[in-house]
Image (cartoon, rainbow, N blue to C red; front, side, top):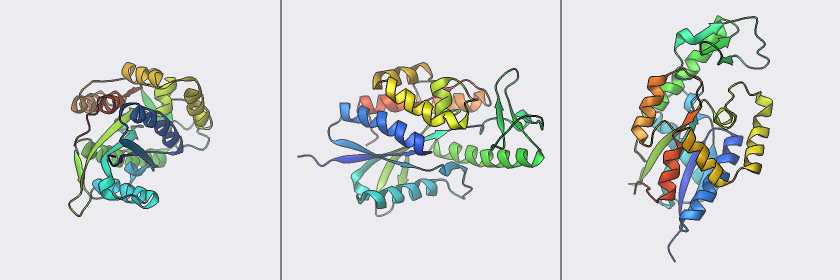
Length: 244
């Protein structure tokens, strides 16, 4: 019997963990009996570090420790990030103290000119700094093809994106209340099969080419059109096009 190998998915939060685990586990199971997936979560790309590759290594080592697997059991790492406001220009952040922000430090403003509202200068500087870090890490990791895990173990890697975030992609509404995000995920899973998810990704794609999909995202900058390049990931898994 061929030894089972694993793909590690690095996603951002609990809802992403559940959502992507559900659909990509089904996709892998349908198309490759010798592969399985492991999913780990953590919004790692907002962390300011000298080398963002180390963030991926840390997530990998954490998943390794939890799973009791070996480095050589993994044949691929896929990371899925929310773009959030990381490609909005500084001019698109508008101070507006009259808005209701509740427990958030910013508010998306998709109508008219695409902006992001913030309550004050301090909040503006803070969120711009956070998303600038995220953009910097995304720009490096989007061109990273493999990661050296030590002991001569090199694992292929790709970073995929959802813009602005998963629930925005599912509902086409960047103003979804944070309290409703889990219900949005649960409802989608309850009423949409794998083929519906694949159709959604195909309708929201920027390109069928990985490098071009990132270039289009970066060129378009701060807009509210929901988009993703996960269609490319689906193609990789459906057609067994893993890097090694």
